Image (cartoon, rainbow, N blue to C red; front, top):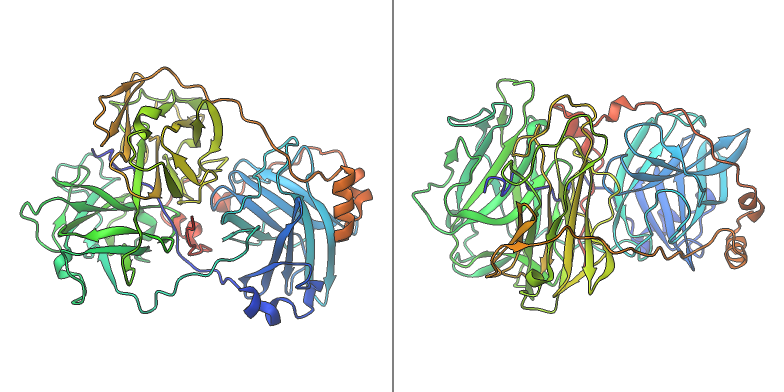
Length: 590
């Protein structure tokens, strides 16, 4: 059950980037600087006080533009599966031989991104004026050309920006990350300024392993909370209340040591006291197993859509906040008061939200060790058969967000959705897993139906290790775990891989299910937007693209790979600050 969890992952984030709604943004976004007009660019977002991004759909293409004050050098926007460089598809605009060019690049790690084998980007315009830089590009909404790409979907996706000091493409001088929906534009966030809220925070605990712990570098500590002593006087413990938002609270003095936090509801009292600290809590206190909120490195606030909320109350008095700290250097004197702020909806919502946990291996009783020296080692797949999802009491559930969780050698994670023998899609688009950038992200599938099959794949890179890597709760061990938030909540909400191709679906009244190694059906890439077709070039010409430059795309050659040590994936105290510096509180919409 501890794997119940060490697991949990990460859900969502902290530091806000300002969204500029179109009406209010007219003076800031369309004041003539950069040449952007409201007629040609549907949406605008302020990324920093000196940077604006413009974007919107245009037929089978999507336009993206950037305006940066007081800058001369290369600049870039990127699509990411998470907040880090791993698996990011980048669009770089810079000068080559005194002429502006647009380049499409891809990064597998924290190294100089390589040019894509096929360049699926067209430069609309680029200019430097009055010490500022402005440019616009067009890309297909979906390309099947050679390379690694994300389709442009009608969801809020992770994006990055970066600036370089010169037009020689090398290490950035500044960067950040944010979320944007390139099709529908910014969504308005609910105003929680007058909402009731409470906070579950650790009572300034010493970050040291308690008696009975297994690894002093990985202490697990819990704090117990009596909800009846925390609720505002206007709220009754016996009534149901819906949580509208979970926001992480990170102690600035100890945030670098926080690996994950999980808030659980408990079924009974068992002699707990409000504010009680459980100094060794790798295994949860008895009865405290109902997961309400998980957080891990790189996560953000969770904001529920208006029709759903996470239930609290209903007589459930006791809660446990489990903290997993990682202190590889055994630094002494660390105290922590991190936790979570819970914001309540002013009235009950239509649906209870829930969390589905997919445990594909979190302990050595589930998975054999991963051999050392393997650059790409994939586990036998974990599988939720249709017999399990057929136990849902509704025809379909809405997926709010998906998170993957592994540890330091995790490389790729993916859940494929199969319906009636056909591949529906990947539950979440993330090309490279990054331990420092875990977050709950919108689903590419959106709806899961009764009878759907879910196939979890986990791949690892142990090329830097000299001994096998076991599975377990500690950061140096590994996990294959995922979760998704959804509504309406269902009793069958957890699947556990038992090893030897056996899955157990908790809450389904089914016995453990034996399965043959599942095969993911072939999927078809559906292109939308062709830079080189007649129709595509007519559309691009109307945008102002010089289509002759597309016909004469230079042959892509390899570039020198330089390690970006400032953004290394090595986990060290302080790395969390990098992961959070430019985070954005985003709303999860259905």
